[in-house]
Amino acid sequence: MDDLQKLIREIPDYPKPGILFYDLTTLLQDQRGFHSLVDKLCDHYSGDKVDIVVGIEARGFIFAPALAYRLGAGFVPVRKPKKLPWKTASVTYQLEYGSDQLEIHQDAVRPGQRVLLCDDLLATGGTAAAAIDLVRQLGGEIVGAAFAVELNFLHGRTKLPGIDVFSLLKYDK
Image 1: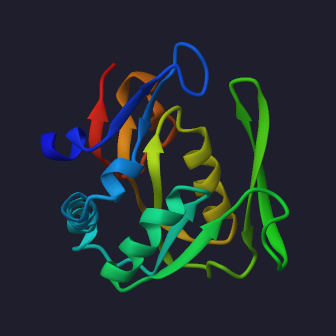
Image 2 (image 1 turned 90 degrees about the vertical axis):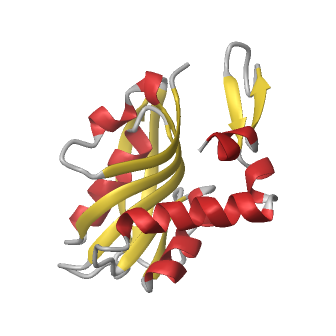
């Protein structure tokens, strides 16, 4: 995993002072790194039956379709409000300062379908928890939640109780 972590550019004070931003675009542009990351995420869920991989806007759209393809599953986007053209289910969730909303097409997940959630990064867990709520509203069964990176010091997995949370690269500071 150290080889993959070395491919991630760390940008201090972005998007605001005191934040260390983990830029995954440098990992994505590396052919071996990107393939390795997708392979390792898929390996974790290869023994599970996955019908749908749900990707969270925006960077989850990079990883989720690749996982869906490799796992023989479909891909479903979870988006910000007013981005989907059909009837939607929505959930509002709390952020550190205010609230946000996510939407999914009402017919994107059928009752009983096995769903893997995927995003680039697990931080505080609020967005992932909201996406899981959406999938459950539609009757989907959550197989797990896959992330390329997890910021352990923000304790995001505590907002995902009972979920198999798998993150490939972990940061403790």
